[in-house]
Image (cartoon, rainbow, N blue to C red; front, side, top):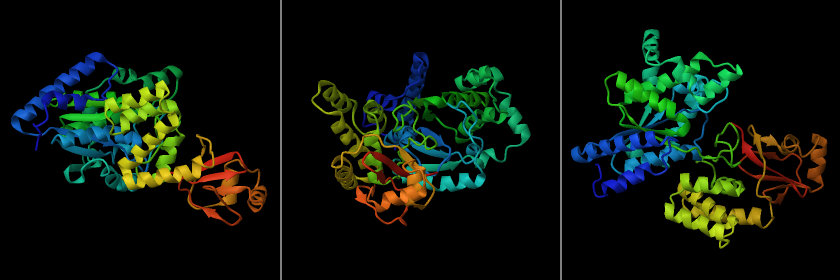
Length: 411
């Protein structure tokens, strides 16, 4: 049921919070359209239909995915209908947004395997009983070649070449594959088939979202409102959070892993995470960073609060308390460095092989000697068995006094 007990302007402020277009005129236009839709919803009692599409390019959702998901939850809490669309067909093509080269294409088997985990993970943020799950292969796979030509007739090559990633590749003479142009057409068709009022996505998705508006208008439909949200930086503090670049924090990762990864982020990345992922109000965020700026709060202590909040969101307070205690015991008391490189392992791996892969030994025989001489630790505990096999779960591998690696599972 659409909520009217919260003031209309408060609802608009909440739904527009964090929205970013990089264009003031477009932002004003989208806010005006949202106001109009919301006013009609209040008058009729009919909820808005809001959706987010995510391609299952890996098995896990990460904190970057939660930014638009939290916006969906805000709509949901105000009584509106939410659709979480799994890109079961678009993932086969690969979204070229913010990419300087074509994405590797997935197989149907990989897509199905990845999609299986998404429904359970998204329930950590959205109310599963009030969330519609959709799969776009249901309407994209049956399209004929004639249908695709009809879709393509609504757009020009010039429109696509205005995209920064395409124009840069064109200028450099790098290949732009025809199937990459198809992605925006498919996402636009998603909006038509879902008959949405609002679509939420990242700022890099703006072209695709606006393509949905254009196609809806061409079909005689009222165009959707587009709300785009900033990109979340990864654990390196600079690049976009992504599983493929190894700088992601998965929402299903163990509490200790999440806590440790947040603590490994550079100080300058904290505000980005606080504003986009936490449940803190703008006033609370401002107070936290004002205290850091004045010297009243050490950045490390602020980061501890941030790590606790992240774990609390996805695992609960008890798990957050245990993760904090684990970090204090394993990391702080042993004075580990704040930034530890990750080592991706494919399944159970002999410890001596992991040491060699991490570049901490030149050979397996040298790695064995390090183990037998007591120079190897896992999560602070000495390891003396050269036949030890490790399965990556975020443990800290230490060789000698100053060489460290965090053991992470490979995709």
